[in-house]
Picture 1: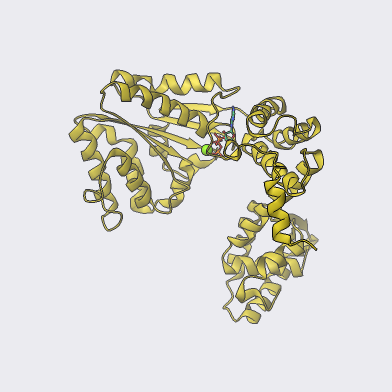
Picture 2: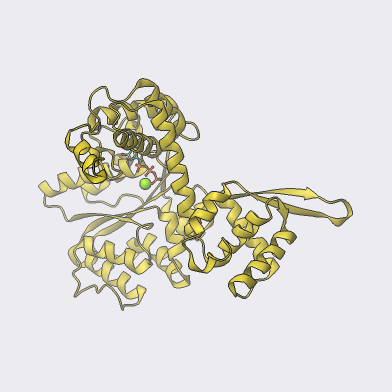
Amino acid sequence: MSDPIDRLLDAAESGKSIIQNRDILHFTYMPDIILHRNSEQEQVTQSLLPILKQSRPSNLLVYGKPGTGKTLVVKKVISKIQERVEKSNFPIKLVYSNSKEETTLYGLLVSIGRQLGLEKEELPTTGLAISEVFKRILEKIDQNGLNAIFVIDEIDYLAQLVSKTGKDILYQLTRANERLKNGSLTLVGISNDLTFKEKLDPRVISSLGEEEIVFTNYNVEQIKKILEERINEAFIQGSVEEPALNLCAALAGGEHGDARRAIDLIRVAGELAERQQSEIVTEGHVREASQKIEENKEETSLKSYPLHEKLVILAIMKANGSSTGEIYTSYKNLCKVVGKDELTQRRITQMLSEIELSGIISGRLVHQGIHGRTKKYKLTISSEMVKKTFKDDLTLQDIV
Ligand SMILES: Nc1ncnc2c1ncn2[C@@H]1O[C@H](COP(=O)(O)OP(=O)(O)OP(=O)(O)O)[C@@H](O)[C@H]1O
Ligand SMILES: [Mg+2]
């Protein structure tokens, strides 16, 4: 019997890898050519052009479904402008930040401040009031007469970061320009949540959305071209079968044309093929990859729930297809088992609607004659998945 570790190391060494450059499949990789997005690249560039003439571009809001190339296009425009700026001596500053990657509004502002050139002494990582952080950022712009563009990616997450005082900061940020004597500030917000406008202050939206650019969905054919391009660069020639490519494009293009999903799929399929020491990526590998990605997503979202949400999910699992009342009874029992105080039925009813939004459970309104109507819920994922994920949770072990 060969050693299991050696066997894998041997296989890796014998060079049966079919992915020749993994980085190209990473989400941060910027391809040289951005396909199907000429008009969007032009629109974003047009909108930011005034900065090169040292006047202030309008605030800009970029919208579109996930994986439609928003981050890619905006980053590329910004980096091209940056290249030119470095050659000239214009006091122009382009700053990129992502609200989803920050856990607090403070963190987001500090990340912006650092890119503007504010050192730790001028802008400490903790301890100041938000309004003070904001003031120092504006002072920096003012004193140096900077023409600044702040890109705030996944700006919808900002709504979650901001507290009451934060909300006001966001408003001030969009209006900061009015407070500057020297220099200027333009905000570029990017969002894939088309309803996020409802979450933000309407005043913020109206000043942020001075200009708006919408990224349309890719179709299956376009996704296929994007994939082909990426596969050519990342994989060994001829190692991805045509049917595998087609399936990837179909799966990712099916709903709304998500290029990220397509690239993830082919990457995972490639890794699975390598692990099985296959020299080609087949349709089967793509199917397996798709299943694996789905399961990972379910697992991550299950894990991220707080305790009472988890108890509610378990209650549904035990009483699958039950009414809200029955689920509540089952939930109360589970609370006893784990020794926690139960929440009110009203709160649990609300929680059920929230969990339903994530797609892990689905609800159906049922009319019960004179008794009015009730909603019945069932799991949309397997109970094995729930058990597997929750069994690591010490509090829940007894139940699972
Ligand atoms: N037209 C394209 N040509 C080549 N690659 C693309 C194209 N559009 C998107 N991609 C690739 O697809 C992935 C997702 O693109 P991007 O991150 O720009 O999406 P997004 O619109 O910002 O999505 P989200 O709203 O989820 O942040 C990236 O790896 C990107 O390189
Ligand atoms: Mg993005």
